[in-house]
Length: 438
Length: 194
Image 1 (tube, chains in turn orange, cyan):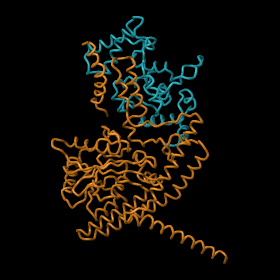
Image 2 (image 1 turned 30 degrees about the vertical axis):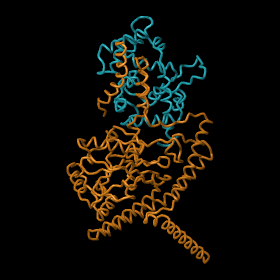
Image 3 (image 1 turned 180 degrees about the vertical axis):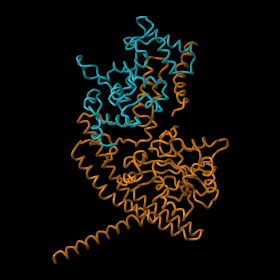
Image 4 (image 1 turned 60 degrees about the vertical axis):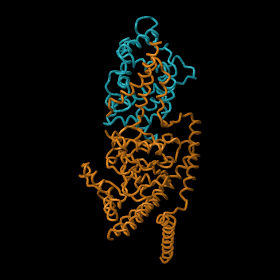
């Protein structure tokens, strides 16, 4: 009976020590740098190591597939070069129908619009089964590696990240509520800025997001509107960890609601009740009032209105461009090799999405701050929106699409069909006329 | 996007389907995911309206005819097997192996591709493309952009060049002989990368 006691004590002591060590490491390597905004460079090293492993895994798969004589399913590469095919057509041939037939069948198998709404497929494999159709049992080594990956991700990384996430969010709520008690003034703004930045940086580490910011001299200033392309809810965290913004959105219930209410105590964000969202004039008025007050932070808006899968930029809704202040475009491009950040809201709910994010290897992305743009003389809101969209697409290397983000949920106008017909007939009939003249 | 094996087990007779069409398991899974995403009401069948919902297809001047090719046997729904069989026409043909004449024509051979294209022209399925049918195709490909005379002259010239037995219509044999250029090869390459 007596023998158990020292053993129990030993166990307790060991547990106590390991917890203490764990939390100290956490504090020193992650939370303190987050507070001060410095970095040890651990994440860059992590990223390089991962890339080497992925390359090895991909080569193994390709070699294995070749041995088994299985044609590898390679994803369709970006860029529709099929317009070039008809260039050499100068006279109608019976085979011309093949061109339209092929495009038709291609669109049946996969079309541009739907492709934007499902996650991007990868050429290489990043040890997550969810991103590769080709994964079958190719070799023992590969399967072992994958299994090891699962253990590391779910056993070590996930708990670590969840702890960090809770810490970050908890600190945000508590500290902003405390700051809310201060009188409005410079101290309050200064503290609020520091608190927001710190908590977002902790959240960034909770996702192991490795972000590269380019052209920081173009960062949005007070009284402006920051506009960015939208891939997932994480976009907000990524941008807000490098600068302070006023968020715009609908008030949610539950945990989100608590966070929103406490954030607004420290600095003015724009939250709408559900009923107010429908009233476009009210929305526009509140936004313009905010923008006119130069002491208030720049507004952060995602004009696409829905999450797109980060291979292209869809039509921007014109509302934010009608307000008439300076627009600061920002392009966000995720590196899909590490973890797919795209949120397919019809497939996953928010919680399962976050869990997926936290059990991926890392989220690597680049953020480009583009030079500010304003609406020019004689330009209407739609043209301005398209101009901004084109700039963002060009910078981020994304395809600039005409399609409306609303198509994800909801039909094609005849004007598009006419465009196709015009192109084709110009080619044929143009040369026919030359022939008859000669 | 589940693992390949679990999706494959959901499809009945998948082995036979793979043998018949020559698609690899990865391709079949992808086609199945696509089929499910088109089948919005989850009935297990596709109707013409489901195809019509594909924007790029609705934009295609011969989109209706392509949709018609899926429903050519007179039914108004198409199940996954028929869907895959028709798409199999577009797989690249294996030209290097000498064909065993006793076996049925592989579904993705050059001849099968030509037959598919032929039925896009020959709407009344009488085995010939009449001048009127050719005009119809030309009209849908060019619509308002050209005059009726221009359309007629193109149709006349085409029939003149292709119609060897002078019956003012193009039969399948005559269609085969028409020089088809590179478009056929591209069809193979393009769809192979899916």
